[in-house]
Amino acid sequence: MREEDVRSIVEQLEDPFLHKSLKELNAIEEIKIKPEKKHISLKIAIAKTGTSEQLTLQQQIVAKLKQAGAETVGLRFSELPKEIVQKYYSDSTSPSILSNEKTTFIAIASGKGGVGKSTVSVNLAVSLARLGKKVGLIDADIYGFSVPDMMGIMNRPIVRGDKIIPVERFGVQVISMAFFVEDNAPVVWRGPMLGKMLNNFFQEVEWGSLDYLLLDLPPGTGDVALDVHTLLPTSKEIIVTTPHPTAAFVAARAGAMAIKTEHEILGVIENMSYFESKLTGQKEYVFGKGGGQKLAEDLQVPLLGQIPLEQPDWDEEDFAPSVYNENHPIGKIYLDIARKVIEITEK
Image 1: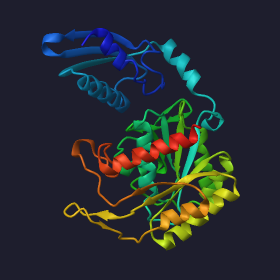
Image 2 (image 1 turned 90 degrees about the horizontal axis):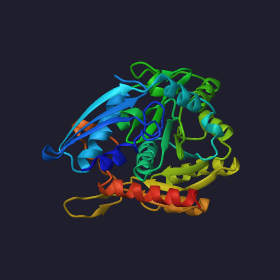
Image 3 (image 1 turned 180 degrees about the horizontal axis):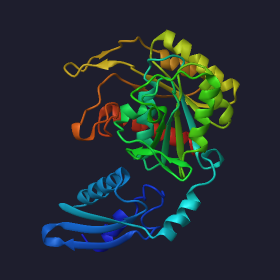
Image 4 (image 1 turned 45 degrees about the horizontal axis):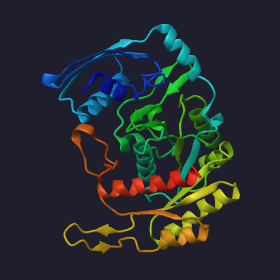
């Protein structure tokens, strides 16, 4: 590999704190290549060293360079000059994500719990990121938060100035009530307090420039769902159901609420559509058939995808119990759904 090849690969990555590319920040201070050993060593300047975010960036750099042919990679980090940090920090602290006209908001809703809405939210967000989009995910299910556990997120957000910096995993920036409670404690708040917390997720979190911000809503049509409809008058929605007729019937209420508040429904995702035996290849329709298609027809929107029952492959070194690998059959279904969402929203 040549120095310019290494530079072009690394400079596309972003500083984890300033959300600017390493190229914009002129952050690549040194590149050394030992061709005979296929070894590359780099010195990179970032806003803050000695953090978990630095480790994440380090892993990204090593993975990309090894993918390009390097056998070993050595990395050193230094801190960017204060004037550069202050310049971009002041650029990035300001307006709320709600004022960003380039961001498409998508609420993931369901009529009832237990249909896999959070699993769909997580995998759709990850799939959009895999397709090159800048993606954020709000775990707005404030009573039943589960997104960090599903994504294998161990870190908590940091605070910089008066802004909360979301945690990034699989290219998705994540914020959740789980980060702000201790030891999985129950949340016993009433409606107005929930609305305030949700508003904080928009106003006090430094999201940067996002293409998509997904919201994993609580099931049903309660306080938080109402707050989302009020805060995000231009939000799109995706309704999640199982094939069971009763689940689809209840999910129709969430769809009716979206229509009543003039939210555009992008489509329906049918989860737990069937179980396919690895031995025989036969499909078993454990929860019945047809619920997703009927709901889509009733709401006059497309059925974006049908997701079967199957466990993701678990990797103990990179543990994320609910995220499907992009080469997994279900991971490919999610990528197909993400492509449809992009096509619909970018018309």
